[in-house]
Length: 244
Ligand code: PGA
Image 1 (cartoon, protein in one colour):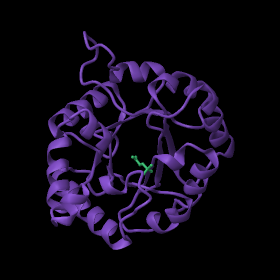
Image 2 (tube, rainbow, N blue to C red; image 1 turned 90 degrees about the vertical axis):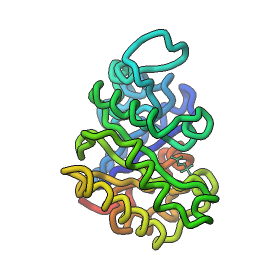
Image 3 (cartoon, rainbow, N blue to C red; image 1 turned 120 degrees about the vertical axis):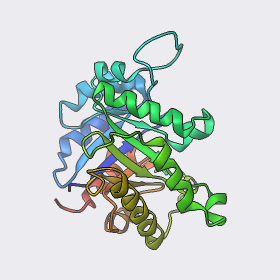
């Protein structure tokens, strides 16, 4: 399976940053699949500037297709803007918007309804790891945030330990291998295509550690925050992806 290097711009990016997407497209990385998820305001213009060379995704969606939900954006609207994927259940959504596993599952269903690839994020906090509960926490998130019907075509998992996001700290290779192996087993037990569903690692991935992280068993790519904002850094990470 080809690795996927996905960029999550979070609440970063004005018109001027669209040049980064153009630069990524111009480099045409071929050893892996790529995806950039800019803020919703830039999606339509990012699609234009990407010229079909960089698939564009979103960072969240509402569970309903339309309705009286001021400020929200539906999966159908994201497709209309040209998005092909959406991240759901990012820890920043779980933390700052109190999104439960059940809410994340509803968003995943909405994304499928609209025809978007769904990237479902899971990951333990520092306290949960310190208590030795990380495998149990992630198992609960996988069980409750992933609806029945997840397939290799419609779903990708991102394991993002909360304590590694934006901190510059990363788990050891052994810790990543343990968790990705755990998630793989849970996916195989529950879904017909669980063996080939992609499991991305996210949390302080950068050019200097991409090679090691992308070489770990059951790591099928990366979800990159801060280092995805500059084309050069994003392309350096993509270059570290395993050849197909
Ligand atoms: P980071 O963010 O790469 O800046 O740590 C990753 C993420 O939150 O997806």
